[in-house]
Length: 310
Image 1 (tube, rainbow, N blue to C red):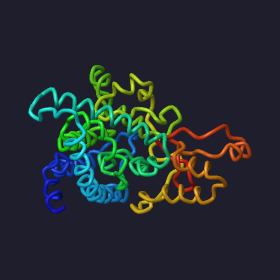
Image 2: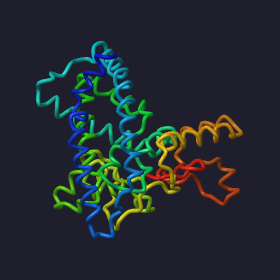
Image 3: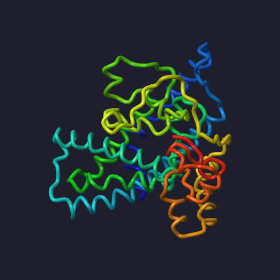
Image 4: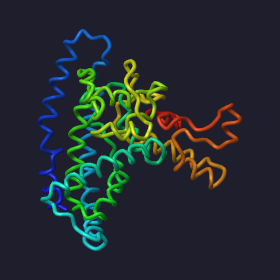
Protein backbone atom coordinates (compact mmCIF):
# COMPACT_ATOMS: atom_id res chain seq x y z
CA UNK A 1 0.00 0.00 0.00
CA UNK A 2 2.88 2.38 0.75
CA UNK A 3 4.24 1.80 -2.74
CA UNK A 4 0.82 2.65 -4.18
CA UNK A 5 0.67 5.85 -2.13
CA UNK A 6 4.15 6.83 -3.31
CA UNK A 7 3.17 6.04 -6.91
CA UNK A 8 0.25 8.42 -6.45
CA UNK A 9 2.76 11.26 -6.07
CA UNK A 10 3.42 10.88 -9.80
CA UNK A 11 -0.25 11.45 -10.61
CA UNK A 12 -0.88 14.49 -12.85
CA UNK A 13 -3.57 15.71 -10.44
CA UNK A 14 -1.06 15.69 -7.56
CA UNK A 15 1.55 17.50 -9.62
CA UNK A 16 -1.05 20.15 -10.39
CA UNK A 17 -1.96 20.87 -6.74
CA UNK A 18 0.47 23.81 -6.26
CA UNK A 19 -0.76 25.43 -9.47
CA UNK A 20 -4.37 24.85 -8.38
CA UNK A 21 -3.69 26.54 -5.03
CA UNK A 22 -2.09 29.53 -6.75
CA UNK A 23 -4.96 29.89 -9.22
CA UNK A 24 -7.54 29.72 -6.42
CA UNK A 25 -5.75 32.56 -4.60
CA UNK A 26 -5.51 34.64 -7.79
CA UNK A 27 -9.23 34.12 -8.46
CA UNK A 28 -10.11 35.12 -4.88
CA UNK A 29 -8.20 38.38 -5.31
CA UNK A 30 -9.83 38.98 -8.71
CA UNK A 31 -13.31 38.39 -7.26
CA UNK A 32 -12.65 40.61 -4.24
CA UNK A 33 -11.72 43.59 -6.41
CA UNK A 34 -14.30 42.91 -9.10
CA UNK A 35 -17.30 45.20 -9.52
CA UNK A 36 -19.26 42.56 -11.45
CA UNK A 37 -22.46 42.10 -9.45
CA UNK A 38 -23.47 39.15 -11.63
CA UNK A 39 -20.83 36.92 -10.02
CA UNK A 40 -21.41 34.93 -6.86
CA UNK A 41 -18.09 35.82 -5.23
CA UNK A 42 -16.82 33.52 -2.53
CA UNK A 43 -17.11 32.69 1.15
CA UNK A 44 -14.03 31.62 3.09
CA UNK A 45 -16.07 29.03 4.99
CA UNK A 46 -17.23 27.58 1.69
CA UNK A 47 -13.65 27.57 0.39
CA UNK A 48 -12.50 25.76 3.52
CA UNK A 49 -15.19 23.10 3.13
CA UNK A 50 -14.32 22.54 -0.52
CA UNK A 51 -10.58 22.32 0.13
CA UNK A 52 -10.85 19.99 3.13
CA UNK A 53 -13.34 17.85 1.22
CA UNK A 54 -10.84 17.72 -1.64
CA UNK A 55 -8.04 16.46 0.60
CA UNK A 56 -10.35 13.81 2.02
CA UNK A 57 -11.28 12.79 -1.52
CA UNK A 58 -7.59 12.46 -2.40
CA UNK A 59 -7.08 10.03 0.47
CA UNK A 60 -10.20 8.06 -0.44
CA UNK A 61 -9.20 8.00 -4.10
CA UNK A 62 -5.70 6.72 -3.31
CA UNK A 63 -7.05 3.77 -1.34
CA UNK A 64 -9.83 2.86 -3.76
CA UNK A 65 -7.64 3.41 -6.79
CA UNK A 66 -5.04 0.99 -5.42
CA UNK A 67 -7.72 -1.68 -5.02
CA UNK A 68 -9.21 -0.96 -8.44
CA UNK A 69 -5.80 -1.01 -10.11
CA UNK A 70 -5.11 -4.49 -8.75
CA UNK A 71 -8.48 -5.79 -9.98
CA UNK A 72 -8.12 -4.15 -13.39
CA UNK A 73 -4.65 -5.62 -13.79
CA UNK A 74 -6.22 -9.07 -13.45
CA UNK A 75 -8.76 -8.15 -16.15
CA UNK A 76 -5.99 -6.76 -18.35
CA UNK A 77 -3.71 -9.80 -17.94
CA UNK A 78 -6.22 -12.65 -18.05
CA UNK A 79 -9.37 -11.44 -19.85
CA UNK A 80 -8.24 -8.91 -22.45
CA UNK A 81 -7.91 -10.62 -25.86
CA UNK A 82 -4.96 -8.35 -26.74
CA UNK A 83 -2.79 -5.64 -25.18
CA UNK A 84 -2.59 -2.26 -26.86
CA UNK A 85 0.99 -0.90 -26.98
CA UNK A 86 1.48 1.84 -24.39
CA UNK A 87 3.77 3.83 -26.69
CA UNK A 88 1.39 3.96 -29.66
CA UNK A 89 -0.49 7.17 -30.43
CA UNK A 90 -3.51 5.06 -31.42
CA UNK A 91 -3.66 3.66 -27.90
CA UNK A 92 -3.81 7.18 -26.50
CA UNK A 93 -6.56 8.13 -28.95
CA UNK A 94 -8.60 5.09 -27.85
CA UNK A 95 -7.80 5.94 -24.23
CA UNK A 96 -8.84 9.59 -24.50
CA UNK A 97 -12.17 8.96 -26.20
CA UNK A 98 -12.83 5.86 -24.08
CA UNK A 99 -12.36 7.80 -20.83
CA UNK A 100 -14.40 10.69 -22.24
CA UNK A 101 -17.38 8.53 -23.18
CA UNK A 102 -17.33 6.47 -19.98
CA UNK A 103 -17.19 9.65 -17.90
CA UNK A 104 -20.20 11.00 -19.76
CA UNK A 105 -22.14 7.76 -19.14
CA UNK A 106 -21.11 7.67 -15.48
CA UNK A 107 -21.87 11.36 -14.94
CA UNK A 108 -25.30 11.03 -16.49
CA UNK A 109 -26.01 7.91 -14.40
CA UNK A 110 -24.99 9.79 -11.25
CA UNK A 111 -27.89 12.17 -11.87
CA UNK A 112 -30.35 9.37 -12.61
CA UNK A 113 -29.66 6.80 -9.86
CA UNK A 114 -30.07 7.98 -6.29
CA UNK A 115 -27.40 5.70 -4.81
CA UNK A 116 -24.77 7.23 -7.09
CA UNK A 117 -26.24 10.72 -6.74
CA UNK A 118 -25.86 10.46 -2.96
CA UNK A 119 -22.12 10.68 -3.51
CA UNK A 120 -22.10 12.97 -6.53
CA UNK A 121 -24.29 15.65 -4.93
CA UNK A 122 -21.25 16.63 -2.84
CA UNK A 123 -19.78 18.35 -5.86
CA UNK A 124 -22.98 20.33 -6.39
CA UNK A 125 -23.57 21.35 -2.78
CA UNK A 126 -21.77 24.72 -2.89
CA UNK A 127 -23.90 27.80 -3.57
CA UNK A 128 -20.80 29.40 -5.06
CA UNK A 129 -19.09 28.65 -8.34
CA UNK A 130 -15.36 29.20 -8.35
CA UNK A 131 -12.13 27.23 -8.71
CA UNK A 132 -12.35 25.80 -5.20
CA UNK A 133 -15.66 24.16 -6.18
CA UNK A 134 -13.66 21.83 -8.44
CA UNK A 135 -12.01 20.39 -5.32
CA UNK A 136 -15.33 19.59 -3.63
CA UNK A 137 -15.39 15.89 -4.50
CA UNK A 138 -17.10 12.90 -2.98
CA UNK A 139 -15.34 10.41 -0.73
CA UNK A 140 -17.66 7.59 -1.84
CA UNK A 141 -15.83 6.96 -5.10
CA UNK A 142 -16.46 3.24 -5.62
CA UNK A 143 -18.76 3.80 -8.62
CA UNK A 144 -16.29 6.20 -10.19
CA UNK A 145 -13.56 3.57 -9.90
CA UNK A 146 -15.79 0.79 -11.26
CA UNK A 147 -16.64 2.41 -14.59
CA UNK A 148 -13.30 1.68 -16.25
CA UNK A 149 -13.84 -2.08 -16.74
CA UNK A 150 -14.32 -1.84 -20.57
CA UNK A 151 -10.91 -0.23 -21.12
CA UNK A 152 -8.67 -2.88 -19.48
CA UNK A 153 -10.90 -5.47 -21.15
CA UNK A 154 -10.07 -3.84 -24.49
CA UNK A 155 -6.36 -4.09 -23.72
CA UNK A 156 -5.61 -0.62 -22.33
CA UNK A 157 -3.21 -0.79 -19.39
CA UNK A 158 -5.06 0.26 -16.19
CA UNK A 159 -2.29 2.67 -15.16
CA UNK A 160 -2.89 4.64 -18.36
CA UNK A 161 -6.62 4.74 -17.65
CA UNK A 162 -6.17 6.35 -14.24
CA UNK A 163 -3.56 8.76 -15.59
CA UNK A 164 -5.99 9.94 -18.28
CA UNK A 165 -8.76 10.30 -15.69
CA UNK A 166 -6.45 12.55 -13.66
CA UNK A 167 -5.88 14.69 -16.76
CA UNK A 168 -9.65 15.13 -17.00
CA UNK A 169 -9.80 16.15 -13.33
CA UNK A 170 -7.12 18.79 -13.88
CA UNK A 171 -9.00 20.15 -16.90
CA UNK A 172 -12.10 20.39 -14.73
CA UNK A 173 -10.48 23.12 -12.65
CA UNK A 174 -10.58 25.43 -15.65
CA UNK A 175 -14.34 24.86 -16.06
CA UNK A 176 -15.23 26.01 -12.53
CA UNK A 177 -15.11 29.78 -12.70
CA UNK A 178 -17.27 32.80 -13.43
CA UNK A 179 -14.23 34.90 -14.35
CA UNK A 180 -14.19 33.45 -17.88
CA UNK A 181 -17.14 34.32 -20.08
CA UNK A 182 -18.08 32.62 -23.32
CA UNK A 183 -15.15 31.62 -25.51
CA UNK A 184 -14.95 31.73 -29.34
CA UNK A 185 -17.69 29.70 -31.00
CA UNK A 186 -15.50 26.83 -32.31
CA UNK A 187 -14.19 26.20 -28.78
CA UNK A 188 -17.67 26.41 -27.27
CA UNK A 189 -18.95 23.95 -29.86
CA UNK A 190 -16.38 21.22 -29.16
CA UNK A 191 -15.06 21.62 -25.63
CA UNK A 192 -16.55 21.89 -22.15
CA UNK A 193 -16.09 25.54 -21.20
CA UNK A 194 -16.86 27.44 -18.00
CA UNK A 195 -20.09 28.61 -19.63
CA UNK A 196 -21.18 25.01 -20.28
CA UNK A 197 -20.25 23.87 -16.80
CA UNK A 198 -21.96 26.77 -15.09
CA UNK A 199 -25.15 25.44 -16.67
CA UNK A 200 -24.42 21.99 -15.27
CA UNK A 201 -24.21 23.42 -11.74
CA UNK A 202 -27.40 25.43 -12.11
CA UNK A 203 -30.58 24.65 -10.21
CA UNK A 204 -32.77 26.53 -12.66
CA UNK A 205 -35.33 24.20 -14.31
CA UNK A 206 -33.90 24.65 -17.80
CA UNK A 207 -30.41 23.80 -16.52
CA UNK A 208 -31.16 20.64 -14.52
CA UNK A 209 -29.34 17.52 -15.76
CA UNK A 210 -27.54 19.18 -18.66
CA UNK A 211 -23.96 19.31 -19.96
CA UNK A 212 -22.41 16.15 -18.53
CA UNK A 213 -19.24 16.24 -20.65
CA UNK A 214 -15.77 16.22 -19.10
CA UNK A 215 -13.46 17.76 -21.72
CA UNK A 216 -15.67 17.45 -24.81
CA UNK A 217 -19.22 18.79 -25.05
CA UNK A 218 -19.90 16.73 -28.20
CA UNK A 219 -21.52 13.87 -26.24
CA UNK A 220 -24.15 16.24 -24.87
CA UNK A 221 -24.82 17.55 -28.35
CA UNK A 222 -25.09 14.00 -29.70
CA UNK A 223 -27.30 12.60 -26.93
CA UNK A 224 -29.64 15.54 -26.33
CA UNK A 225 -28.35 16.80 -22.98
CA UNK A 226 -26.76 20.05 -24.18
CA UNK A 227 -28.01 23.38 -22.87
CA UNK A 228 -26.37 26.75 -23.62
CA UNK A 229 -26.04 29.34 -20.89
CA UNK A 230 -28.97 31.73 -21.17
CA UNK A 231 -28.61 33.64 -17.91
CA UNK A 232 -26.47 33.38 -14.83
CA UNK A 233 -27.39 30.16 -12.99
CA UNK A 234 -28.45 29.78 -9.38
CA UNK A 235 -25.94 27.39 -7.85
CA UNK A 236 -26.22 24.73 -5.18
CA UNK A 237 -28.95 22.18 -4.54
CA UNK A 238 -32.61 22.77 -5.33
CA UNK A 239 -33.15 22.37 -1.60
CA UNK A 240 -30.05 24.08 -0.27
CA UNK A 241 -28.02 22.34 2.39
CA UNK A 242 -26.86 25.56 4.10
CA UNK A 243 -24.06 23.83 5.97
CA UNK A 244 -20.29 24.18 5.88
CA UNK A 245 -19.73 20.86 7.67
CA UNK A 246 -17.79 18.59 5.34
CA UNK A 247 -19.29 15.57 7.16
CA UNK A 248 -22.83 16.73 6.50
CA UNK A 249 -21.95 17.62 2.92
CA UNK A 250 -20.65 14.08 2.38
CA UNK A 251 -23.21 12.07 4.31
CA UNK A 252 -26.58 13.83 4.40
CA UNK A 253 -28.06 12.21 1.29
CA UNK A 254 -26.91 8.73 2.31
CA UNK A 255 -28.64 9.35 5.65
CA UNK A 256 -31.80 10.56 3.91
CA UNK A 257 -31.80 7.56 1.61
CA UNK A 258 -31.35 5.15 4.52
CA UNK A 259 -34.26 6.75 6.33
CA UNK A 260 -36.48 6.40 3.27
CA UNK A 261 -35.50 2.75 2.87
CA UNK A 262 -36.27 1.99 6.52
CA UNK A 263 -39.69 3.61 6.19
CA UNK A 264 -40.59 1.94 2.88
CA UNK A 265 -43.65 -0.35 2.97
CA UNK A 266 -42.48 -2.94 0.43
CA UNK A 267 -39.22 -4.38 -0.86
CA UNK A 268 -39.98 -2.89 -4.26
CA UNK A 269 -40.25 0.54 -2.67
CA UNK A 270 -36.94 0.00 -0.89
CA UNK A 271 -35.29 -0.70 -4.23
CA UNK A 272 -36.95 2.38 -5.69
CA UNK A 273 -35.48 4.61 -2.99
CA UNK A 274 -31.99 3.26 -3.72
CA UNK A 275 -31.90 2.69 -7.47
CA UNK A 276 -34.68 5.00 -8.64
CA UNK A 277 -33.98 8.56 -9.76
CA UNK A 278 -33.35 11.23 -7.13
CA UNK A 279 -36.69 12.40 -5.81
CA UNK A 280 -38.41 9.06 -6.51
CA UNK A 281 -41.53 8.31 -4.47
CA UNK A 282 -44.04 5.42 -4.60
CA UNK A 283 -47.04 6.13 -6.81
CA UNK A 284 -49.47 6.24 -3.89
CA UNK A 285 -47.43 8.93 -2.12
CA UNK A 286 -47.26 11.00 -5.30
CA UNK A 287 -51.02 10.73 -5.71
CA UNK A 288 -51.60 11.75 -2.09
CA UNK A 289 -49.46 14.83 -2.67
CA UNK A 290 -50.81 15.52 -6.12
CA UNK A 291 -47.46 14.72 -7.73
CA UNK A 292 -46.89 13.22 -11.13
CA UNK A 293 -43.65 11.31 -10.64
CA UNK A 294 -40.05 11.53 -9.60
CA UNK A 295 -38.35 14.89 -9.74
CA UNK A 296 -35.72 15.51 -12.42
CA UNK A 297 -32.43 13.83 -11.59
CA UNK A 298 -31.07 17.17 -10.51
CA UNK A 299 -33.79 17.44 -7.91
CA UNK A 300 -32.49 15.51 -5.00
CA UNK A 301 -32.06 15.24 -1.35
CA UNK A 302 -30.44 17.78 0.81
CA UNK A 303 -32.18 18.01 4.08
CA UNK A 304 -35.33 16.13 3.56
CA UNK A 305 -34.75 13.12 1.47
CA UNK A 306 -34.68 13.79 -2.17
CA UNK A 307 -34.44 17.25 -3.44
CA UNK A 308 -31.10 18.46 -4.60
CA UNK A 309 -29.39 19.74 -7.64
CA UNK A 310 -27.68 18.72 -10.78
